[in-house]
Length: 409
Image (cartoon, rainbow, N blue to C red; front, side):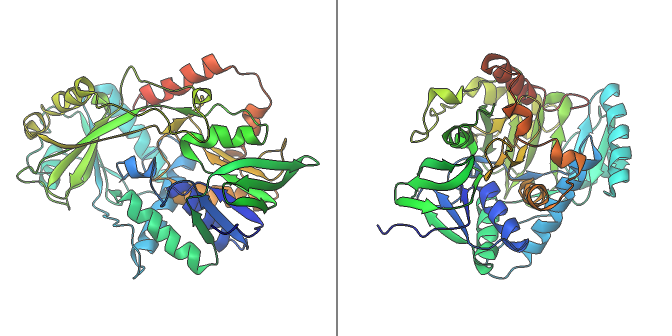
């Protein structure tokens, strides 16, 4: 294989976040961008395992706006003729099973309204019209967001890829990063399995290997892979692709149609995490065996609301190692300790749905003289200054996963 050409910016990682970052940088005027991916194709690892739900209801205005930006971008990409993200803007139902959760929904409505997001608390009859066959008799409150939906993560990545290529971004797959060369405190180049490349900037969007890429530049960041699983059922009578996505936070469940099947997943109260120091950059994270007790529990929790969930057979199980951070926030922006080392990682299971917003925040972090307080709070510098240890960081990151649907999260 021929050696790769030099580039001003090298993006490491060909999942939804990496390709979205390359696309956002190119659209913001950055030139001479090269994306490298160690797998033979794009969207091959964490992105391929994502469920594809896109929800905009969040507990802060900043996070709502990030999700809204992503949804607006998905609509733009869906209008492309050549490559579309298979975006279905079918809306979403969020169902409260306790009075406390109902109170949280009312607070979430206030946050959404401040951000300019259309939401509404609807009654049981309207919810039943939107998803026939689902039981809402015991719902304390039901929150409807008409502009939510779902997409196909691999299709989204290829839609970004199409637009980024049109703006001059180059892509090289089957290329593994081996080293980052630092000169006078800043990035000067990288070594790969296809030779050395001179560059001024490395964007680390390496997913479950983001820790290892940062370490090549001498940066220690608590980016913790946590196991996540969901399943897709055999076809179920009554399920159609145009039904809304749904979330039952009191049961820690989420779901959506998958053509005429049910996609159902949840957040485990006792999660499994990895210490990324236990495997290397050239290695894959440990394989995941199907955990049938966990998957069966998802179905049992869903059955009172949707009886077919407990009866339908499982067609496919999906699992992966999305990364979490101790404080539950992304790690985005340039390191002040190593100039030119730019983070786009630690996505806390929002990598696909938040990919366009992450790209926008990355551009803001790199180009604005005064980024917003929220974007500044995502800087890798918050961890690079020390004050944390791996044992505690891993427990905290795992707790972010385990409390994903906790009130106030």
